[in-house]
Length: 191
Image (cartoon, rainbow, N blue to C red; front, top):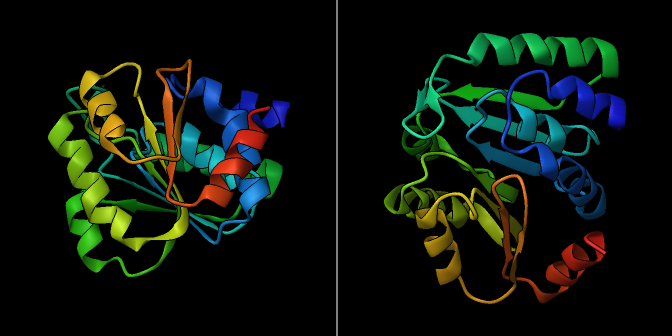
């Protein structure tokens, strides 16, 4: 796993401290579908895919934004994915280039793990949550990156009901589920 994590940190990432948690989360929960809203250079997407359990959908318009910076990362992400396929046999990622609000209109698949890491305004995070969480089940997990970095992300995360926690560092990762049983499993991963 260490060799893999070193390989995928080829490009800058604010997600660096959450890689092992993401891998253990996937290994523990055996998700069928993982949706990563906000790929940037792919670190989180590649972490979710490492155990090769289920399918990972990395959705992004690959143009950056006012918070991440404006840049085109699409070809870099595809090149790294091809390297990972060759070196690690990774084959369970589908990248979808487009706007979250447009992709959700044609989405129909239940989601086990949803990672929200797009634009970090309150309205954008709320919109992503409301649009995409309707595909999540009671046992699904919804992750919010940057809960320690952006007040708007933190404010929305704090409005969610029980069964949530924040993993500090790397801008903070908010973890939320409606399921008490799944929440206990998450806490066990963090011990």
